[in-house]
Length: 290
Length: 256
Image (cartoon, rainbow over all chains, first blue to last red; front, side):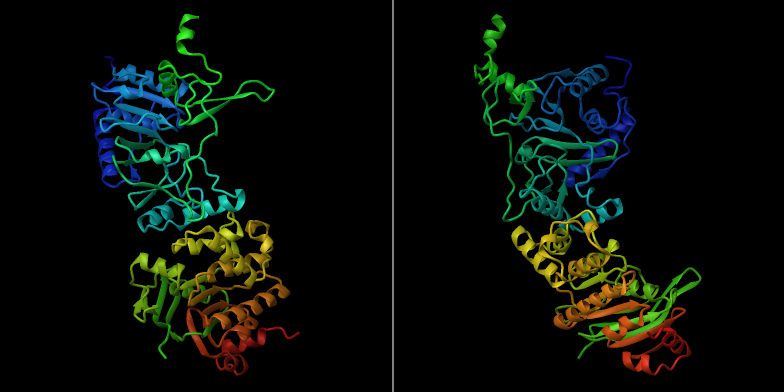
């Protein structure tokens, strides 16, 4: 342990955040204001998610942090280290072993269980923001369930691009009531929002917390003649051969060569360890031998 | 026939100053009421009170709903009033920028009200939007252009289309021709007159331009210092003004 209070925040702050989380769980999709604290990292690096995680963690928890699906990118590594240092909790890269998962912009490929909590980092919690700049007005629209404007955004997409071009932060309606921004996850992940785990969303700069309880109905907005489609790159993973996972496109050289790999590094590594090999992959057994 | 809108004793003060005071009138279905007066006479305050944008200090605004029930729009709940303002009411602003979403295409602007009342079929929404653009003489090819690319007159016509798409029964207009050059004004007035007659709209038009009310309004109210000083049939008031201020107003118009 260290000289920090457990998980960095003081106990009063954690209580305050827990109250906001409970309120958020009681009203799925509703943005609960909370007194966001200054964290030792810049806004945009997940200050909201970190505060929610800090209020959620217990000393027995095992934590996993992912950034765009990967466990080994700057954001994920630094937040994982932050909690190792301030909370002394065990950390892992394996989705199945984690009890609290903080994520930036992805939902893990592996199906989550009832005893897990998924914490999202949210940059802009208000789905109506880009069409209605006034916070007073958007709150009124939420309270009166005036969501026509959300469809104006989708209409504009189709008018301009011929299809709903919104590929991430795709608006959803939670339990038939609140329209919610699922944070910038790819719309491929939207169907996974109906899951067994608790989902908590923290926006530090905007000072909002919202939540989706387990098994809550989450519907992606669409038009009758332009239904919602969870899209991904039409390609199998080049490392593990998975055809059902969300892919990152990696540019290999300046001659147009590219490869598609799973954005979920743990999922990809697990499949390769189990012997799956993609078009450009090398089986892990061979890697070990080399 | 029962009145569509019954206004009784409306008063609005801004602190000690009077916005408008003691205004009462009835508006019948299909009737167009003009409100004229100089700047600061309280006509816009009155219009905003009637349209639920401002809350009057005293008085009643009784509106006959589609089901025949008469409701006071001042005391009705906010959701109900907001529902009215995107279905049965329309508000045409003087500056099209106040009434349009400038960063949304013309089609999206017209479709917004439809989507607000639950339309969820893109093809139908778009067809309806194109139909309405045609009715306000905007070419179909401009449906995906943003209003920023439109001229002032086109913006104003787009605003009218956006407001009328849900088939409202009562239209509030605040200087709809203000800031447009005379030939564009004439075209807009012609269009408005056609739409009002064709759809059987009731309308309340606030303006300081007597030519506008002469063309559009059946009845006229003349306001000065927050009071209604004269009212009656438009031609009667304009051709035989009784009040000294109305006489001044009528004689101030340049005869070309």
